[in-house]
Length: 514
Image (tube, rainbow, N blue to C red; front, side, top):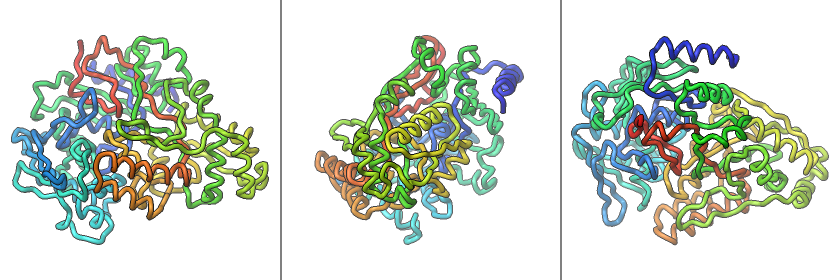
């Protein structure tokens, strides 16, 4: 859709629907089924519609009581029991019970569902991985509805982050009655049941979703914003123009082409984020199946100049995968070293880039991703003498190609932590992980991650550092480019309850107009 036409339709929609209490530009078309959510755009909407046992604290993004009013951990850390609120209901007034969490867990772990995030509960819940791999029954999975208000989890190890983890969409409840009645259409307006602070009033795919306050939500008296319109557009320039014109209250992500102008605005919000922008290798494909090639490509990129001259948004250039966290020492891959890069490429059989095949960098349509890809394309040409082409595609098509078909050699990627622990970055690369798009597989790495589940404190962090060093320092499984910075446009003198958070999650529940 051309920019002018999109802007005209967006303005027309605002007029036809009447003024909304709050309007957001979200960056992409969302998925509304919690079991199938994989991206930030979907989570942004989902946090308004659904709520897990724990929710994301609006300031820290640590877990805070959601559907569960309390929880307790057994002395050995292997059982975690949540007590649900008796006032928590679905939007049709029926109670949210422990069985809803059991059903949702069975659904996401069922191999027939093909949920990319199944690996996350499979990693920590006893028997979950076996069931997900078709090697065991669900009756052996460590989740049990003790009664309507009590759900118990049995873990594979004492995971100190487990309670915080349940704020993630992979652990949200799902309404069995709606799924069984409507099948894949259960998330459509009129069919969907939600248990969060908002209802789905309207959804026009590729345009917007409209949320309205859920009168049946257990804490509805503290929900101040009555309606929220969320645009799905990956055109940052259009989104920025709408924001400047007062047609959008919150722009998530910024227009790279306007970064110098945006940085001067008082309503520009930026802060460090627990996440890493990176280039993903499909390590099963030539020539990047050779670690020397991967290291050569990594060593040929001047990341500091990229951040200083191209992205310019407060990102932190990095050779590490895991961002700094309390008690954890991030490991490093190879740094910028053009001469070493040339030697590595020559050792792999491509001296001066001779006979190196023309590769393609694949990325989803976005002016920022394009600018980064063009910069890296030129770096590889200048420093290694190799040619690469660029290919952009619509976001969902790109996700399917990268995450399901794995039909790429090099693809842009990014990962935002799901909870505040190094494990949220490192479990990604276990063999068969639903988000292991580059198909990295090493039994030794898997064993280290498993051992970390059983360890505690400093010993646990040391094991995770070993895994980090194996994947990155030894194998250069991907190229970390920079640690993310949150970048948003919102006037916090006008809107309260919005805070810069380490994971970038924001709940509309806490927001209000000043």
